Length: 178
Ligand code: PRP
Image: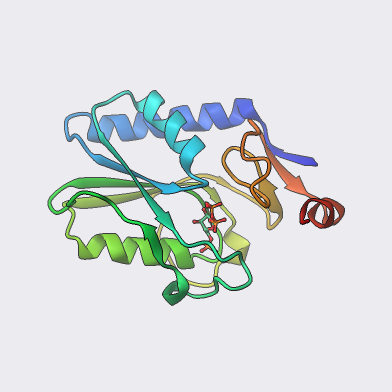
C-alpha cells in the first residue's frame, strides 16, 4: 500500500483543528456529532485534543457502496440522533467528503432541526470527485482520488485500525475486495 498520510502529520493537523474548535466552543457546550462508521477515529482524537465539555452523539447513515449511493436522495438515516438539537451549537464530524452527496444530505437534514449553529469538520477532502457543491468549514487534508484506507476508513470493513492513511493499488482493491 502507498502511504498517503503519516500518523505524525495526522496528529499535528488534529491538534491544529482542535485548537481552533476549542477557542470557539469552550464555553458553549456544543453537540458533537460523529458520522458512523468511518468518522469514529477522527472524532475520538479530536474530542480528546479539544478537551472541552460537549455532548457527544452519533448518527449512522446507510451505506450502499459507492456504486449505488449516487444521489443525496439515496442517503438514508439508519440510526438517528436521540436528542433534540434545536438551539444548540452543533459540530458535525465526518471522515471524508467524496462526491459530496452524503454531507449535503446531512447538512440539510441537521439544519432542518434548527440548531443555533452548525460547523462541519471533515478529515479528508477527495475534492476531484465532487459532484455537488457543499461547503465544509474545516478540512483536515485534501487528498488525491485514490481508494483510501486507515484512520477509520475501510475497504470491505478492513483496515479501519491503521494509524496512517494508505492508498490501495488496483491489485489490492481486487485482492481485498473478496
Ligand atoms: C463514506 C464516508 C462518508 C461518505 C462520503 O461512508 O464516511 O459518509 O462515504 O461519500 P460521498 O461524499 O460520496 O457521499 P461509507 O459509505 O464508506 O460508510 P462508513 O463510514 O460506514 O464506512
